[in-house]
Length: 334
Image (tube, rainbow, N blue to C red; front, side, top):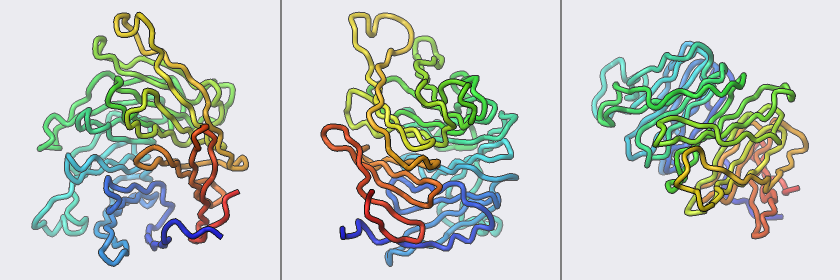
């Protein structure tokens, strides 16, 4: 039997309803959770290896779908989105706190975005080289972008660029392309179960010259509802890798096409797309996916209660290298 990769710890989160998202900070030493009980919790990893809840507060007026950390270059900042149609930005205050702040462990709300008329299903901070920006998507198919006017004053944010009307119903997830050498790009997924609606993942690229987002591709091979999308960390590759979670997980390679007109002709980048991997989850719904920092290992969680770790060999053949059960036990990869 293979030796465990690492010790598994079980945490009694004590949320009063379903936990919808778990997010680790840049260093993996802090964790945030959100729930249908309308609360956020922040956890810190102690020197004894145990996780301790250091903050717990009611954050929204409805179920909280997602929570995410920004890059530590901008401080200890969280973003959360909710069924109550709002997105909130939270910042941790260092030093003495007022009696009101003590109940939420020095975390204060800096601003709330209220532009959406429907439930906001995902929020993601942009890669740090783009500055302190966030993108949100909502069930009416609208993607919105916001930027902090002054990173030292997070109470002032402005809408940047123009919003994207994806014309997809039930937008469920969004992911930024982390590449520094290509134009800003986002992938947007929809969990609309109707297969006749066409491709459920759209790719948009920002044009500096036009100052707007243009649709560059639709992943037509993905017609089932999508629960999560994730670009892999780039690390200097000349192509992009996108993972899509629906029934099973599909890995797509996106190669920008080079030609004599590249860089001189206006318009979005043309991409050559190919499916480089199909990660078999025995037709189970996959709800969350996450890459490691080098973009070489993908973790997936599915409704059979298992977390699987996947890795590709030099031939781009993906294999499950470890399976973890919900009770903390390791299983042999299948």
